[in-house]
Image 1: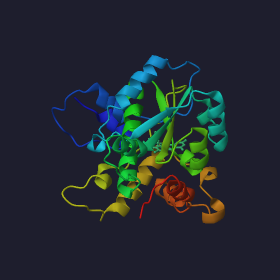
Image 2: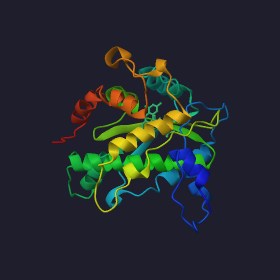
Image 3: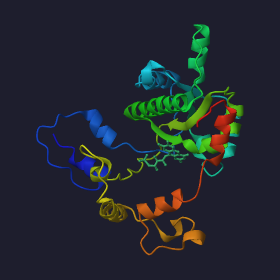
Image 4: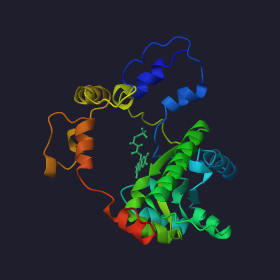
Length: 276
Ligand SMILES: Cc1cc2nc3c(=O)[nH]c(=O)nc-3n(C[C@H](O)[C@H](O)[C@H](O)COP(=O)(O)O)c2cc1C
């Protein structure tokens, strides 16, 4: 069995020949996963959403602590208030369904109080474990939803408004948003974003990034051959100017050079976390 066409779609290059691969239809689908931001008017059946949430909460969990919570935003007024926080992402308000995946360090503390073995879960360890659990539940939901023909778009930009989000959704202390998720039947096929090659992301036996620069240059060229970013989409030209060749690495370097999320640390401290 060959995954050649999916591999090429995902990485823009041929896979290493490997005989006797099993034919797993789900693997073909995962390799073709894509983010969807435009949705058909078709509603998502409630029973299907609950089934997908069941699949999502089947994700692995650190120590079986189960520190993820999902807030399903069904009330139009609350959704509109969330959408108004990020007017340049209209899919937050337009998607048929919107979920907020939260790290939940509170439930374990309450469990301890109930059993009279008090724990302090507002530490970096508690925060990190809860974040990881929420991320695993989020990604499991996305893959399950795609398998059922739905499309999703995670929304971490809501963390830039964490205080307002927590108020709108009634989040208590030790509960924090990791990402929202738009869910619906896709209105279009969508675009497969090319990923970095395994030569940069997979390390055998020891970490080795000695060939990173060459690999990034080649990746930029492969991406550009498939989809070239037009000059008017170059990020912040007033700060960085216009690049004669504008690839993924230039775009991400510009994006990462502009700070984001500074208020999140303050929000977490107010929510009872001590992360030093
Ligand atoms: C944790 C996380 C947060 C994201 N936040 C946003 C967001 O706030 N708004 C948005 O439009 N897309 C968001 N995305 C979608 C990414 O921009 C998208 O994954 C990326 O463009 C690559 O596309 P692909 O997922 O189709 O490979 C997020 C994705 C992840 C995994």
